[in-house]
Image (cartoon, rainbow, N blue to C red; front, side, top):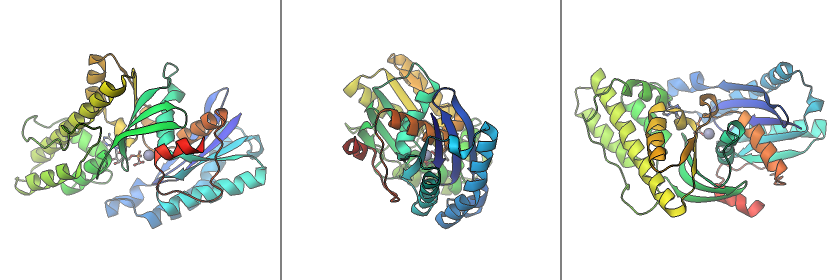
Length: 338
Ligand code: KG4
Ligand code: ZN
């Protein structure tokens, strides 16, 4: 079976074809970073217009790369939410039109679920149940992933997402968007212990996070500093240390509650090697295995949508929003659909 995956929820246009026998046979992502860089963040109107421009050439490319024709596609999976409404509508309308033309089934995919399922595509030893730690630009949460389509949110951010903390800190200290990768690079030359940033709500007996206070603290630190390159590096390192303590602290709590032996870490921030190392150390210490997507699958892509489409189809969870999109679509609402 061939599944076409279409991702347009934010600032990456991603299209891919997943073959249930051979795995991924084509995968293309166009990142809009250069378009949004000068504004310091994603501009929704520009993002949706660019998706509309790119989507057809990308489809042609993946068909060419895979040597397949439109008629070979058996199922179309597209991101229906959460995300930016105008962007989601581009993908949804495109997917529906294609499905109509080739007369094949269509399946609406929740972007967060796709991030969580992506590592199963890559690791044969990963199976349910597991903890999902989703750390991206828009979301930060710990999920009890019981089975396909069955998720319980154990905790989530009360304000900013981790990626936002990285991006806002980067902007403050004069780095480009998106700040995450640049912060990671700078932190390598930071001196540990130069500052001590707060670990908001770490000691509360739940799995929630809060990062907006951290951002305010960093702003005050930066303003009263000499604003040198070394200060930038030290702030970058201490931001990573504070974030890691929060992530590990709450994973520990989740593990005490459920005791699963696998953790899936996904979303854009999971590309960060410093964070991976800290989580690996923790996971080793409690005999748990941490699974990360290959770095190119950490940020948004069509491959994870195609794969999620296949897994949902296989599980009989064929859900079509019929043209509606869901800018907000909490993961635990999926339980009601199966
Ligand atoms: O999953 P994603 O592509 O989009 C959302 O669904 O939000 O995540 C993008 C986020 C951005 O905030 C970006 O700064 C962050 O992931 N990011 C990183 C790294 N690479 C991307 N954050 C920290 N370290 C990285 N290496
Ligand atoms: Zn994402």
